[in-house]
Image (cartoon, rainbow, N blue to C red; front, side, top):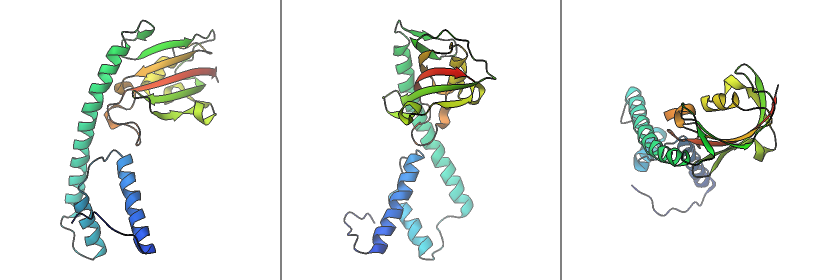
Length: 205
């Protein structure tokens, strides 16, 4: 059933193909990294052709949940190993402080202001990357500082912010269990992934 060559000659064909591209990209962004494209195409053909699906709605939901669970577990295991090695090596550097929680930080600029409490609101500039250097979020790139409650962000940030004097700029190395754990976040942060942030504490509001 695999289609290796297909010409998109009509508007209907181009739009149909475009819809397929959108669905596939959306699935990949949700870390659904491996599907059987032939079975997927068969399901689409059955629904649009008025055929009875090969499995019931309950079976479909069960299969999806089990399959996504397997993908998540496999992805988390691989990411955890990579993150563990990175953090173990990084923690050996003299300029890096390793806390009991597993959080690591490096002081780039030491401020002299007060330290925020968990109940405070702060304004920061930050630049977030994965351990391979790819950027997933950055107020610096947007050119707009971010304000939020200290207790409203991931655990690694909460711990670090309460240690940072106002005016400081630190580089944080955050294990997955202090970030988004094995669930990941969006399409860019996979399950079990350690994160790196450069954080500048601009003000305590």
